[in-house]
Image 1 (cartoon, rainbow, N blue to C red):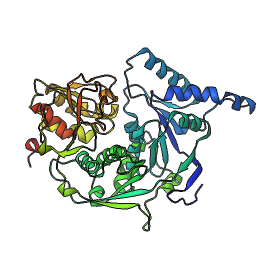
Image 2 (cartoon, helix red, strand yellow; image 1 turned 180 degrees about the horizontal axis):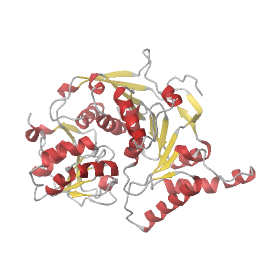
Image 3 (cartoon, rainbow, N blue to C red; image 1 turned 30 degrees about the horizontal axis):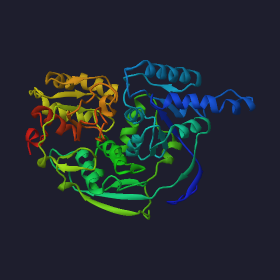
Image 4 (tube, one colour; image 1 turned 120 degrees about the vertical axis):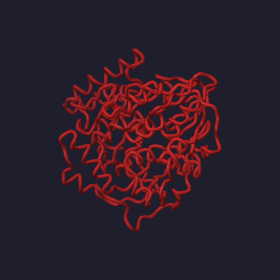
Length: 425
Protein backbone atom coordinates (compact mmCIF):
# COMPACT_ATOMS: atom_id res chain seq x y z
CA UNK A 1 0.00 0.00 0.00
CA UNK A 2 1.23 3.50 -0.85
CA UNK A 3 4.15 2.41 -3.05
CA UNK A 4 4.72 3.99 -6.45
CA UNK A 5 3.99 1.79 -9.44
CA UNK A 6 5.19 2.24 -13.01
CA UNK A 7 3.52 1.11 -16.23
CA UNK A 8 4.23 -2.53 -16.91
CA UNK A 9 4.87 -3.36 -13.26
CA UNK A 10 3.05 -6.38 -11.83
CA UNK A 11 1.01 -5.83 -8.69
CA UNK A 12 0.59 -9.23 -7.10
CA UNK A 13 -2.31 -8.21 -4.84
CA UNK A 14 -4.03 -4.88 -5.47
CA UNK A 15 -6.55 -3.73 -2.81
CA UNK A 16 -9.90 -2.67 -4.27
CA UNK A 17 -12.00 0.06 -2.67
CA UNK A 18 -15.40 -0.63 -4.25
CA UNK A 19 -17.01 -3.63 -5.95
CA UNK A 20 -20.46 -3.66 -7.55
CA UNK A 21 -22.52 -6.21 -9.44
CA UNK A 22 -25.47 -6.36 -11.81
CA UNK A 23 -27.91 -9.27 -11.97
CA UNK A 24 -26.13 -10.92 -14.91
CA UNK A 25 -22.85 -11.78 -13.14
CA UNK A 26 -23.88 -11.21 -9.51
CA UNK A 27 -25.77 -14.51 -9.02
CA UNK A 28 -23.05 -16.84 -10.42
CA UNK A 29 -20.36 -14.92 -8.51
CA UNK A 30 -22.32 -15.39 -5.27
CA UNK A 31 -22.87 -19.10 -5.90
CA UNK A 32 -19.18 -19.62 -6.72
CA UNK A 33 -18.13 -17.67 -3.63
CA UNK A 34 -20.37 -19.82 -1.42
CA UNK A 35 -19.12 -23.05 -3.01
CA UNK A 36 -15.42 -22.35 -3.32
CA UNK A 37 -14.83 -20.61 0.00
CA UNK A 38 -17.09 -22.70 2.27
CA UNK A 39 -14.24 -24.95 3.39
CA UNK A 40 -11.88 -22.00 3.91
CA UNK A 41 -14.22 -20.24 6.31
CA UNK A 42 -15.21 -23.49 8.01
CA UNK A 43 -11.61 -24.52 8.63
CA UNK A 44 -10.94 -21.09 10.13
CA UNK A 45 -13.98 -21.45 12.37
CA UNK A 46 -15.55 -18.31 10.91
CA UNK A 47 -18.91 -17.44 9.45
CA UNK A 48 -18.80 -16.99 5.67
CA UNK A 49 -18.61 -13.26 5.04
CA UNK A 50 -17.53 -10.90 2.28
CA UNK A 51 -14.37 -8.83 2.81
CA UNK A 52 -16.32 -5.64 3.64
CA UNK A 53 -20.09 -5.37 3.04
CA UNK A 54 -19.92 -1.55 3.07
CA UNK A 55 -17.70 -1.62 -0.01
CA UNK A 56 -19.94 -3.93 -2.07
CA UNK A 57 -23.23 -3.14 -3.81
CA UNK A 58 -25.76 -5.01 -5.93
CA UNK A 59 -27.47 -3.04 -8.69
CA UNK A 60 -29.93 -5.02 -10.86
CA UNK A 61 -30.24 -3.14 -14.13
CA UNK A 62 -29.88 -5.20 -17.29
CA UNK A 63 -33.28 -6.86 -17.67
CA UNK A 64 -35.46 -5.18 -15.07
CA UNK A 65 -38.31 -5.33 -14.39
CA UNK A 66 -37.43 -8.99 -14.71
CA UNK A 67 -38.13 -10.58 -18.09
CA UNK A 68 -37.86 -14.25 -17.08
CA UNK A 69 -38.03 -16.74 -14.21
CA UNK A 70 -34.24 -17.12 -14.40
CA UNK A 71 -33.65 -13.38 -13.99
CA UNK A 72 -36.16 -13.17 -11.15
CA UNK A 73 -34.48 -16.06 -9.37
CA UNK A 74 -31.08 -14.42 -9.74
CA UNK A 75 -32.31 -11.11 -8.34
CA UNK A 76 -33.92 -12.93 -5.42
CA UNK A 77 -30.62 -14.72 -4.73
CA UNK A 78 -28.80 -11.37 -4.72
CA UNK A 79 -31.37 -9.81 -2.39
CA UNK A 80 -31.18 -12.69 0.10
CA UNK A 81 -27.37 -12.69 0.04
CA UNK A 82 -27.29 -8.91 0.46
CA UNK A 83 -29.60 -9.09 3.47
CA UNK A 84 -27.52 -11.84 5.06
CA UNK A 85 -24.23 -9.99 4.48
CA UNK A 86 -25.35 -6.42 5.10
CA UNK A 87 -24.68 -5.35 1.50
CA UNK A 88 -26.56 -2.50 -0.22
CA UNK A 89 -29.18 -3.93 -2.58
CA UNK A 90 -30.77 -1.50 -5.01
CA UNK A 91 -34.28 -1.99 -6.35
CA UNK A 92 -35.24 -2.79 -9.91
CA UNK A 93 -35.75 0.55 -11.62
CA UNK A 94 -33.32 2.49 -9.41
CA UNK A 95 -31.14 2.83 -12.46
CA UNK A 96 -28.22 1.59 -14.50
CA UNK A 97 -25.33 0.48 -12.31
CA UNK A 98 -22.75 2.87 -13.74
CA UNK A 99 -25.10 5.79 -13.23
CA UNK A 100 -26.08 4.77 -9.69
CA UNK A 101 -22.46 4.16 -8.64
CA UNK A 102 -21.58 7.81 -9.21
CA UNK A 103 -24.97 9.39 -8.57
CA UNK A 104 -25.19 7.82 -5.10
CA UNK A 105 -21.58 8.62 -4.20
CA UNK A 106 -20.74 4.93 -3.98
CA UNK A 107 -17.58 5.37 -6.06
CA UNK A 108 -15.42 8.35 -5.13
CA UNK A 109 -12.41 10.17 -6.64
CA UNK A 110 -9.10 8.42 -6.06
CA UNK A 111 -10.65 5.01 -5.41
CA UNK A 112 -10.01 1.74 -7.21
CA UNK A 113 -13.44 0.51 -8.28
CA UNK A 114 -14.34 -2.62 -10.21
CA UNK A 115 -17.56 -4.17 -11.43
CA UNK A 116 -18.64 -7.10 -13.55
CA UNK A 117 -19.23 -5.01 -16.67
CA UNK A 118 -16.86 -3.56 -19.25
CA UNK A 119 -18.35 -0.06 -19.00
CA UNK A 120 -17.20 0.35 -15.40
CA UNK A 121 -14.70 2.75 -16.97
CA UNK A 122 -17.54 5.32 -16.72
CA UNK A 123 -16.40 6.00 -13.14
CA UNK A 124 -13.10 7.31 -14.48
CA UNK A 125 -14.91 10.62 -14.95
CA UNK A 126 -14.68 10.95 -11.15
CA UNK A 127 -10.94 10.48 -11.17
CA UNK A 128 -11.14 6.90 -9.99
CA UNK A 129 -9.31 3.89 -11.43
CA UNK A 130 -12.32 1.86 -12.55
CA UNK A 131 -12.56 -1.13 -14.85
CA UNK A 132 -14.51 -4.30 -15.55
CA UNK A 133 -13.64 -7.75 -14.24
CA UNK A 134 -14.88 -11.30 -14.79
CA UNK A 135 -16.85 -13.71 -12.61
CA UNK A 136 -13.81 -15.51 -11.15
CA UNK A 137 -12.07 -12.27 -10.22
CA UNK A 138 -15.30 -10.99 -8.65
CA UNK A 139 -15.71 -14.18 -6.63
CA UNK A 140 -12.20 -13.89 -5.21
CA UNK A 141 -12.70 -10.19 -4.52
CA UNK A 142 -15.80 -10.92 -2.45
CA UNK A 143 -13.62 -13.02 -0.16
CA UNK A 144 -10.36 -11.08 -0.11
CA UNK A 145 -10.95 -7.52 -1.32
CA UNK A 146 -7.89 -7.87 -3.54
CA UNK A 147 -7.30 -8.25 -7.25
CA UNK A 148 -4.43 -10.56 -8.10
CA UNK A 149 -1.76 -10.27 -10.80
CA UNK A 150 -2.69 -6.80 -12.04
CA UNK A 151 -0.26 -5.21 -14.46
CA UNK A 152 -0.17 -1.41 -14.32
CA UNK A 153 -1.20 -0.16 -17.78
CA UNK A 154 0.45 2.47 -19.89
CA UNK A 155 -1.50 5.69 -20.47
CA UNK A 156 -2.37 7.62 -23.62
CA UNK A 157 -3.09 11.26 -22.95
CA UNK A 158 -5.83 12.88 -25.02
CA UNK A 159 -5.20 16.62 -24.95
CA UNK A 160 -8.49 18.12 -26.10
CA UNK A 161 -8.72 21.88 -26.57
CA UNK A 162 -11.22 24.27 -28.10
CA UNK A 163 -14.94 24.76 -27.63
CA UNK A 164 -17.47 22.27 -28.97
CA UNK A 165 -19.62 23.90 -31.63
CA UNK A 166 -23.32 24.58 -31.24
CA UNK A 167 -25.24 21.33 -31.52
CA UNK A 168 -22.07 19.31 -30.88
CA UNK A 169 -21.88 17.27 -27.69
CA UNK A 170 -19.41 15.08 -25.77
CA UNK A 171 -20.92 12.02 -27.48
CA UNK A 172 -19.93 13.49 -30.85
CA UNK A 173 -16.45 14.17 -29.50
CA UNK A 174 -15.85 10.63 -28.28
CA UNK A 175 -17.24 9.08 -31.47
CA UNK A 176 -14.86 11.33 -33.40
CA UNK A 177 -11.98 10.12 -31.21
CA UNK A 178 -13.00 6.49 -31.76
CA UNK A 179 -13.05 7.11 -35.48
CA UNK A 180 -9.56 8.56 -35.30
CA UNK A 181 -8.06 5.86 -33.06
CA UNK A 182 -9.85 2.77 -34.37
CA UNK A 183 -11.15 -0.20 -32.37
CA UNK A 184 -7.72 -1.13 -31.03
CA UNK A 185 -6.20 2.33 -30.83
CA UNK A 186 -5.92 2.41 -27.04
CA UNK A 187 -5.55 -1.32 -26.45
CA UNK A 188 -4.80 -2.31 -22.83
CA UNK A 189 -4.00 1.29 -21.97
CA UNK A 190 -5.66 3.99 -19.90
CA UNK A 191 -7.18 6.89 -21.82
CA UNK A 192 -6.55 10.07 -19.84
CA UNK A 193 -8.49 13.15 -20.94
CA UNK A 194 -7.30 16.68 -20.32
CA UNK A 195 -7.29 20.11 -21.93
CA UNK A 196 -9.53 23.17 -21.99
CA UNK A 197 -12.46 21.22 -23.47
CA UNK A 198 -12.58 18.95 -20.43
CA UNK A 199 -11.93 21.81 -18.04
CA UNK A 200 -15.26 23.31 -19.16
CA UNK A 201 -17.15 20.01 -19.65
CA UNK A 202 -19.87 19.04 -17.18
CA UNK A 203 -19.93 15.66 -15.44
CA UNK A 204 -22.61 14.23 -17.73
CA UNK A 205 -20.30 14.76 -20.68
CA UNK A 206 -17.27 13.35 -18.89
CA UNK A 207 -19.21 10.20 -17.99
CA UNK A 208 -20.17 9.75 -21.64
CA UNK A 209 -16.60 10.11 -22.92
CA UNK A 210 -15.14 7.75 -20.32
CA UNK A 211 -17.94 5.25 -20.93
CA UNK A 212 -17.16 4.84 -24.64
CA UNK A 213 -13.38 4.73 -24.21
CA UNK A 214 -13.46 0.96 -23.85
CA UNK A 215 -14.69 0.85 -27.48
CA UNK A 216 -11.14 1.66 -28.60
CA UNK A 217 -10.00 -1.23 -26.38
CA UNK A 218 -8.88 0.99 -23.48
CA UNK A 219 -8.44 -0.76 -20.13
CA UNK A 220 -10.20 2.24 -18.64
CA UNK A 221 -10.40 6.02 -18.87
CA UNK A 222 -9.84 8.85 -16.43
CA UNK A 223 -10.31 12.60 -16.03
CA UNK A 224 -8.33 14.40 -13.34
CA UNK A 225 -10.62 15.59 -10.51
CA UNK A 226 -11.28 19.33 -10.35
CA UNK A 227 -13.85 21.73 -8.89
CA UNK A 228 -16.54 20.34 -11.21
CA UNK A 229 -15.83 16.82 -9.96
CA UNK A 230 -15.88 17.80 -6.31
CA UNK A 231 -19.11 19.79 -6.64
CA UNK A 232 -20.77 16.72 -8.18
CA UNK A 233 -19.42 14.35 -5.53
CA UNK A 234 -20.40 16.62 -2.64
CA UNK A 235 -23.96 16.89 -4.00
CA UNK A 236 -24.18 13.11 -4.41
CA UNK A 237 -23.01 12.48 -0.86
CA UNK A 238 -25.19 15.25 0.57
CA UNK A 239 -28.20 13.51 -0.96
CA UNK A 240 -27.69 10.62 1.43
CA UNK A 241 -26.53 12.65 4.40
CA UNK A 242 -22.82 12.01 3.98
CA UNK A 243 -19.68 13.92 3.10
CA UNK A 244 -16.07 13.23 2.18
CA UNK A 245 -13.88 12.31 5.13
CA UNK A 246 -10.38 13.78 5.48
CA UNK A 247 -8.99 10.35 4.61
CA UNK A 248 -11.06 10.19 1.40
CA UNK A 249 -10.06 13.72 0.47
CA UNK A 250 -6.43 12.78 0.96
CA UNK A 251 -6.81 9.94 -1.58
CA UNK A 252 -7.73 12.33 -4.38
CA UNK A 253 -4.81 12.84 -6.76
CA UNK A 254 -4.04 14.23 -10.19
CA UNK A 255 -1.45 13.20 -12.73
CA UNK A 256 2.02 14.32 -11.77
CA UNK A 257 3.59 17.12 -13.77
CA UNK A 258 6.28 14.69 -14.87
CA UNK A 259 3.86 11.84 -15.65
CA UNK A 260 5.01 9.58 -18.49
CA UNK A 261 2.57 8.81 -21.30
CA UNK A 262 3.00 6.25 -24.05
CA UNK A 263 1.90 9.03 -26.39
CA UNK A 264 -0.17 12.21 -26.52
CA UNK A 265 -3.04 12.66 -28.98
CA UNK A 266 -4.08 16.24 -29.67
CA UNK A 267 -7.72 16.90 -30.56
CA UNK A 268 -9.21 20.21 -31.71
CA UNK A 269 -12.76 20.07 -30.36
CA UNK A 270 -13.82 23.10 -32.40
CA UNK A 271 -13.45 21.04 -35.59
CA UNK A 272 -15.73 18.23 -34.45
CA UNK A 273 -19.16 18.05 -36.09
CA UNK A 274 -22.25 16.13 -34.98
CA UNK A 275 -21.06 12.57 -35.53
CA UNK A 276 -22.57 9.12 -35.98
CA UNK A 277 -20.98 5.69 -36.01
CA UNK A 278 -22.22 3.50 -38.83
CA UNK A 279 -22.73 -0.28 -38.61
CA UNK A 280 -21.04 -2.35 -37.37
CA UNK A 281 -18.36 -0.64 -35.28
CA UNK A 282 -18.28 2.32 -32.85
CA UNK A 283 -15.07 3.35 -34.63
CA UNK A 284 -16.86 3.60 -38.00
CA UNK A 285 -17.52 7.28 -37.37
CA UNK A 286 -18.73 9.85 -39.91
CA UNK A 287 -19.96 13.44 -39.71
CA UNK A 288 -23.75 13.41 -39.63
CA UNK A 289 -23.74 15.76 -42.62
CA UNK A 290 -22.49 12.83 -44.73
CA UNK A 291 -25.21 10.40 -43.65
CA UNK A 292 -28.98 10.43 -44.20
CA UNK A 293 -29.84 6.73 -43.98
CA UNK A 294 -33.47 5.85 -43.11
CA UNK A 295 -34.09 4.86 -39.48
CA UNK A 296 -37.13 3.04 -38.08
CA UNK A 297 -36.02 2.69 -34.42
CA UNK A 298 -34.42 5.29 -32.14
CA UNK A 299 -33.19 4.43 -28.66
CA UNK A 300 -32.27 7.18 -26.20
CA UNK A 301 -30.88 5.48 -23.12
CA UNK A 302 -28.03 3.34 -21.73
CA UNK A 303 -25.12 4.06 -19.38
CA UNK A 304 -23.57 6.18 -22.13
CA UNK A 305 -26.32 8.80 -22.11
CA UNK A 306 -29.88 9.47 -20.80
CA UNK A 307 -28.76 11.70 -17.95
CA UNK A 308 -30.32 15.09 -17.22
CA UNK A 309 -28.57 17.13 -19.90
CA UNK A 310 -29.30 14.43 -22.49
CA UNK A 311 -33.04 14.49 -21.82
CA UNK A 312 -33.06 18.29 -21.80
CA UNK A 313 -31.70 18.58 -25.33
CA UNK A 314 -33.91 15.76 -26.62
CA UNK A 315 -37.01 17.45 -25.18
CA UNK A 316 -35.95 20.76 -26.69
CA UNK A 317 -35.89 19.21 -30.17
CA UNK A 318 -39.05 17.13 -29.69
CA UNK A 319 -41.15 19.93 -28.16
CA UNK A 320 -44.09 20.68 -30.45
CA UNK A 321 -43.00 17.99 -32.92
CA UNK A 322 -44.00 14.38 -33.53
CA UNK A 323 -41.92 11.26 -33.95
CA UNK A 324 -41.98 10.17 -37.60
CA UNK A 325 -44.87 7.83 -38.37
CA UNK A 326 -42.50 5.07 -39.51
CA UNK A 327 -40.13 5.35 -36.52
CA UNK A 328 -40.40 4.03 -32.97
CA UNK A 329 -38.68 6.12 -30.28
CA UNK A 330 -37.79 4.41 -26.98
CA UNK A 331 -36.55 6.63 -24.15
CA UNK A 332 -35.18 5.18 -20.91
CA UNK A 333 -33.78 7.61 -18.30
CA UNK A 334 -30.52 6.40 -16.79
CA UNK A 335 -31.80 6.31 -13.19
CA UNK A 336 -34.89 6.73 -11.06
CA UNK A 337 -33.56 10.07 -9.86
CA UNK A 338 -33.17 11.28 -13.44
CA UNK A 339 -36.63 9.90 -14.31
CA UNK A 340 -38.32 11.64 -11.38
CA UNK A 341 -36.45 14.88 -12.03
CA UNK A 342 -37.48 14.83 -15.70
CA UNK A 343 -41.08 14.11 -14.68
CA UNK A 344 -41.14 16.99 -12.18
CA UNK A 345 -39.75 19.37 -14.80
CA UNK A 346 -42.20 18.41 -17.55
CA UNK A 347 -39.48 16.91 -19.72
CA UNK A 348 -41.01 13.43 -19.79
CA UNK A 349 -44.37 14.95 -20.72
CA UNK A 350 -42.81 16.75 -23.68
CA UNK A 351 -41.09 13.55 -24.81
CA UNK A 352 -44.25 11.48 -24.35
CA UNK A 353 -46.39 13.95 -26.29
CA UNK A 354 -44.03 13.60 -29.24
CA UNK A 355 -44.99 9.92 -29.47
CA UNK A 356 -42.12 8.29 -27.61
CA UNK A 357 -42.29 5.18 -25.44
CA UNK A 358 -40.82 5.95 -22.01
CA UNK A 359 -39.71 3.03 -19.86
CA UNK A 360 -38.47 2.69 -16.26
CA UNK A 361 -34.75 2.98 -15.68
CA UNK A 362 -32.75 -0.03 -16.92
CA UNK A 363 -30.38 -1.04 -19.71
CA UNK A 364 -33.31 -1.85 -21.98
CA UNK A 365 -32.59 -2.80 -25.58
CA UNK A 366 -28.90 -1.81 -25.39
CA UNK A 367 -27.73 -5.42 -25.23
CA UNK A 368 -30.66 -7.04 -27.02
CA UNK A 369 -32.71 -8.61 -24.23
CA UNK A 370 -35.92 -6.61 -23.83
CA UNK A 371 -37.86 -3.35 -24.30
CA UNK A 372 -37.17 -2.91 -28.01
CA UNK A 373 -35.44 -5.87 -29.67
CA UNK A 374 -34.47 -5.25 -33.29
CA UNK A 375 -35.90 -7.38 -36.09
CA UNK A 376 -34.06 -8.36 -39.29
CA UNK A 377 -33.69 -5.32 -41.49
CA UNK A 378 -34.34 -2.78 -38.73
CA UNK A 379 -32.20 0.36 -38.74
CA UNK A 380 -31.68 1.84 -35.29
CA UNK A 381 -30.03 5.06 -34.14
CA UNK A 382 -28.94 4.46 -30.55
CA UNK A 383 -27.31 6.67 -27.91
CA UNK A 384 -25.67 3.58 -26.41
CA UNK A 385 -22.05 2.51 -26.84
CA UNK A 386 -21.96 -0.53 -29.12
CA UNK A 387 -23.34 -1.27 -32.57
CA UNK A 388 -21.89 -4.68 -33.34
CA UNK A 389 -23.93 -7.20 -35.31
CA UNK A 390 -26.63 -8.72 -33.12
CA UNK A 391 -25.96 -6.33 -30.23
CA UNK A 392 -29.57 -5.17 -29.99
CA UNK A 393 -31.34 -8.19 -31.43
CA UNK A 394 -31.18 -9.61 -34.92
CA UNK A 395 -27.70 -9.87 -36.50
CA UNK A 396 -29.45 -8.74 -39.67
CA UNK A 397 -30.29 -5.35 -38.12
CA UNK A 398 -28.21 -2.19 -38.55
CA UNK A 399 -27.22 -0.03 -35.56
CA UNK A 400 -25.93 3.53 -35.69
CA UNK A 401 -24.60 5.46 -32.68
CA UNK A 402 -25.18 9.14 -32.04
CA UNK A 403 -25.83 11.83 -29.45
CA UNK A 404 -29.21 12.40 -27.77
CA UNK A 405 -29.63 15.51 -29.94
CA UNK A 406 -29.00 13.50 -33.11
CA UNK A 407 -31.35 10.81 -31.79
CA UNK A 408 -34.18 13.28 -31.28
CA UNK A 409 -33.70 14.91 -34.69
CA UNK A 410 -33.55 11.47 -36.31
CA UNK A 411 -36.76 10.39 -34.57
CA UNK A 412 -38.54 13.41 -36.04
CA UNK A 413 -37.29 12.89 -39.60
CA UNK A 414 -37.20 9.08 -39.75
CA UNK A 415 -33.64 9.24 -41.07
CA UNK A 416 -30.23 10.27 -39.73
CA UNK A 417 -30.61 14.01 -39.18
CA UNK A 418 -28.38 16.91 -38.19
CA UNK A 419 -29.69 18.31 -34.88
CA UNK A 420 -28.35 21.79 -35.61
CA UNK A 421 -31.28 22.54 -37.90
CA UNK A 422 -33.57 22.20 -34.86
CA UNK A 423 -31.29 24.00 -32.42
CA UNK A 424 -30.11 26.80 -34.67
CA UNK A 425 -26.52 26.86 -35.86
